[in-house]
Image 1: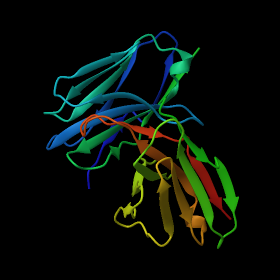
Image 2: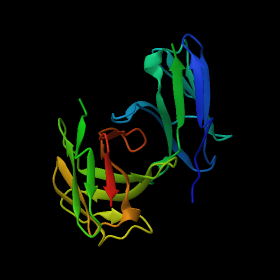
Image 3: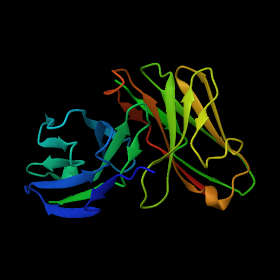
Image 4: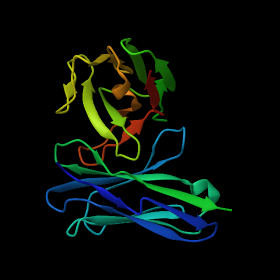
Length: 111
Length: 118
């Protein structure tokens, strides 16, 4: 059974702070890593899909890096805003296999 | 674009009854849809993969006779929880496979359905 871990489970930051959290996954037979942003009562929203070791993706104040050799991805948020409050999910895929999700990191940005 | 709706958002039913949940892709055609279940503080767990016009593929440990999946059109998949029991109470969420290469395709999610069986 594949195991995808995310840390921390939850965190609170002040508005304007930058923050980051981690997704850990099996390093062998890597195919793709996805990040989603999930606000309460809404649909999870795709942020990034990453496939290559060393990939770095950016969308506004959010960016992500990928290290497939050691099996982790970091998600960074620069200058957090209250609207960034959400659960951030990562999902890992092997070739020809379905998504395996981590449990998520719940971020609360305090004004 | 790539909007997926799910209905109902919440449902409470009595033990022994059946509940149907609908998942629709609103602005694109989805040959493949996925059904997930999430228990509190746990990850989304894939229950089954639904392919238009063919039988669903269920994950190990998911009873196909209990969780009936129908994907009769390119925009609609339904999950029916038959003879529901309190242990079936959970959050159910669907997704539809978007376009893209095998390595980069995305899943577009519905907002989920909270099922409570009393």
